[in-house]
Figure 1: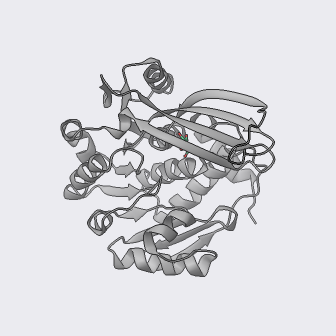
Figure 2: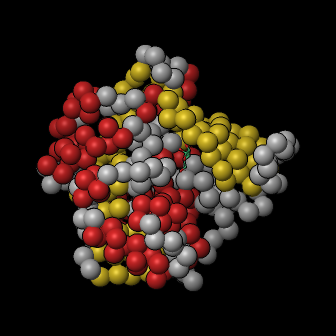
Length: 310
Ligand code: RIB
């Protein structure tokens, strides 16, 4: 059975170029590849969850333009519900300029939210029943903050498990944090939100303490090559990373979040769901691109069976 996951998040078109190194300020670098495709943290997480086996409703906003059609065509091909993909008559669909270093597989991103940064309160109200009926509600910080706050309020009032992936990082109120059941920052985002410099797992633990003081009960900090730090109801675990040949790490955090909420929706506990998300994240970096690199449930299951971790 596919469980209902509702995601409020961004859709933007990714314009991705690869080169043997990232340009320094003022430098022009010859690229080896260019690709245009669906992206945005919210949409990537939605596609990851959908392919992992969840029934996903995406709440987002696009422009009335060509890039907006990239969104609707892609969601339809993926078999995702587009009833809550709103259209802005004035603001264009967002874009992300992504540069990938093909030697290190690291990236830099400049994202302009465009239409999905203009989601109105009345649009969130139209989604109220959908959010109320969700098994899990997931959001990020790539749409406008007012929309995030309104949707989180609805989820919280209706006791829906609420997950916040605080990316891209920006200041958020303690009031918003206190309404979140599970927060899933990477180490940089967790450092900024808590004021704890995070280098190792001991630091992650200190940052988790700060989140808990602010009222978030469960904390997951993705720590790149060090693995994933998980704190759930006072118990903590470190999930080691999988050893894979990474060719593009863009969207790995999105893959983790999509996989995580899918497993959570299937009534897995937070530790087990984080293990599942960790596998989805690892698989996603073995392909080029963001949403198109998200693995299917069969691929995830095979990967888990066949791979050992460090
Ligand atoms: O997390 C990766 C995503 O961030 C990209 O798809 C890009 O759209 C940016 O928003």
